[in-house]
Amino acid sequence: MLLCKQEEAGIQLNAEQADWRDDTDDKSDDQELEAHYIYMAKLQQVSLDVDDSG
Image (cartoon, rainbow, N blue to C red; front, side):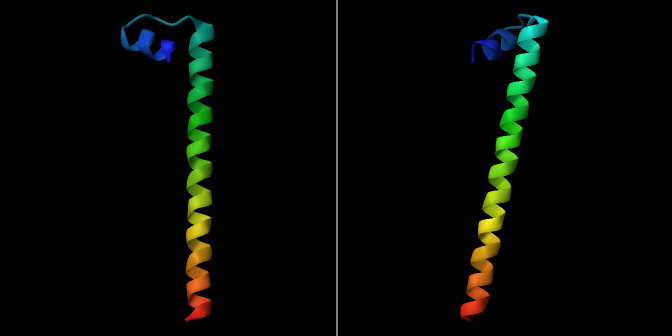
């Protein structure tokens, strides 16, 4: 959080801070993508269940 505020304020991050920020951003992207795939798989399963019951 502090690094984001520093960056927004125009304070240049050192290389270690920038690497940490990039790694953290990647983890967030990975988590969002995983959540999306889980959601889509559940939707597909519900759709298949509805087709089987109808």
